[in-house]
Length: 338
Ligand SMILES: NC(=O)C1=CN([C@@H]2O[C@H](COP(=O)(O)OP(=O)(O)OC[C@H]3O[C@@H](n4cnc5c(N)ncnc54)[C@H](OP(=O)(O)O)[C@@H]3O)[C@@H](O)[C@H]2O)C=CC1
Ligand SMILES: O=C(CO)COP(=O)(O)O
Image (tube, rainbow, N blue to C red; front, side, top):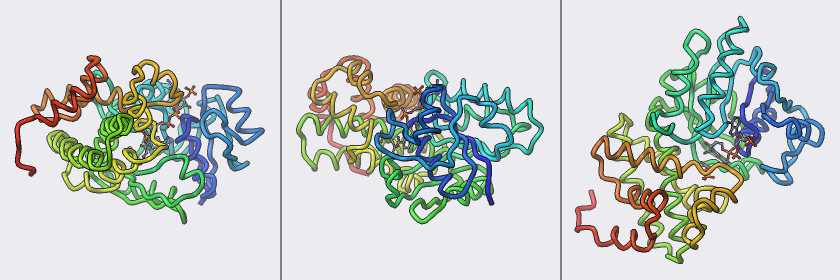
């Protein structure tokens, strides 16, 4: 059945998920804050700034009019970076209050924690859009670089919600021959895995930039997974979720792919570029930088040991020397692995 869907955020991920949904036969309205970008998408069917040389389906509608995109939508998909979620959700609520249609599903595909509050994205959405104006809240997450979904490479991800029926609805709307969606009711674990893997990806990129080999990268991913699972479980996640698609799956893709913005940022840091220049030159969101601060603070609050996250925090926020941090990690007292 053709469903009206609003996708908010026309960056790499939002625009490609919008494309998947159009290919699945849905009526998709992609919201951007730039008139020229909407015009480019509608007339040339391109989005050169975010997805070079990709051609979008002609049936995709791009608009700068948020009210038009969410009006009568059965599903509203947030794909703006984490720091923008609250403000965009507040604007969405204003429009939802003005329409008397069935309450839409609220879905997000972003990966991070809110600075200061440390809230997960579904918690921000839950706070901002009261239940009277929506149905379930779902997080869509897993190993999925937009560049590969764009070329219809096989991609498996997870739709997570406290309400299994909401996750199943999302599964039905997104699934096709190259995009397979599982459901999961551990919303906490899925969102935390998604947020925390970006920190480890910064570290993996930095190791590469410094010239370390595969042993070091495998070790970082393994011990990184151990510590993000520790914090996740302390925050209410199920441990098994961290060995699923949104956990180890996303950790692998983000720590090993040249498409990864976080890995590329880490690689540049490892090569000696200053953080401010790395962030300014990426031109796309690097969620791991802010998430690292949130995870560092949460680990302290929860008294969870996170040596890798702490080391990366020292490098990002205290200008610590990466090689010195690696030395300190290697010289920690001997431990039992498990
Ligand atoms: N890229 C990918 O492959 C994947 C990304 N993700 C996650 O999806 C989220 C988005 O990532 P991605 O698409 O890569 O990011 P991009 O940087 O490519 O795009 C971000 C989009 O959000 C818009 N935006 C940023 N701030 C605001 C704001 N305050 N109000 C309105 N719109 C805003 C940007 O608009 P403008 O051009 O005006 O700045 C841009 O259209 C992140 O959380 C990321 O971790 C998840 C899986 C895969
Ligand atoms: O989460 C993502 C892929 O699953 C995208 O983030 P990165 O670009 O940093 O890898």
